[in-house]
Length: 300
Image 1 (cartoon, one colour):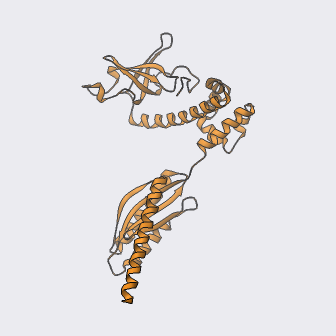
Image 2 (image 1 turned 135 degrees about the horizontal axis):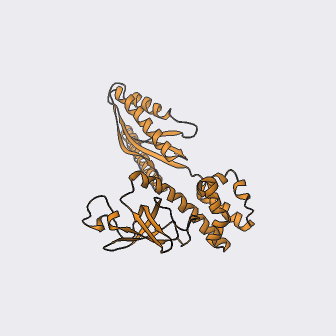
Image 3 (image 1 turned 30 degrees about the vertical axis):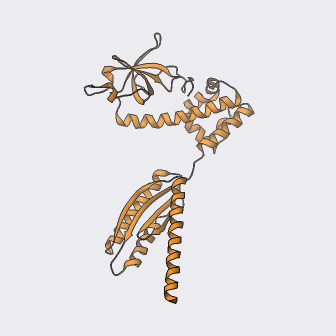
């Protein structure tokens, strides 16, 4: 990350939350770089590191770690920025990590356009970036909206090479990607209804499919099944599969069977998919070999 700042203000405001990287640890506290403000230096005083008694600073922070801290005091003339880690709540951290992730994405787009068009990053921010922060609350929100409303960026009358580089990078980084969610479950039923009860329970799970999030349930090898859905919204996909699993378990239990969650719903990677396909291919071959053996035995 370059030393260009992400926001228009050169210094943060008192009580503002900022993201820093620990650079050095001394007896007085910790020296840090403010990542959103061009890596200017700040300091977390020893008394502001933790609410608890400090026995070892290394157990609280370490060099190179990224921390969310609160601004206690800013002296722009002397360049002093005092910070606090102990005043930050877990809720503050979650909120700030989300904001920083968005700011970092915007900054990455600006840096790429800067290199492509051979223009200073700060010039791009001055031309349109910081204005988008003012108008939309965050430039990331403006960039995302521009995917469907190009006029948001067209109003700045950018040179064609800058406009093309900007829109291409926004599309590449912010166009929603389909995420595949998968859960692994074991379903058994040794009662009179047996297989029919399992089929009915699985069909109830699949019936929760929506137009946006279709659910598919596949047999791997009895009693192991996988529940899969594809969605743009990871959290909604996980929630829907969890609901499907709850229904399957409720129904199969009422029939005298049971369901065990072997692996909870999670986003899968291409590696996960390849491993699953290899496992299913292996099981199919084994089943074919067993069928062949049965034919030979019958002929004998």
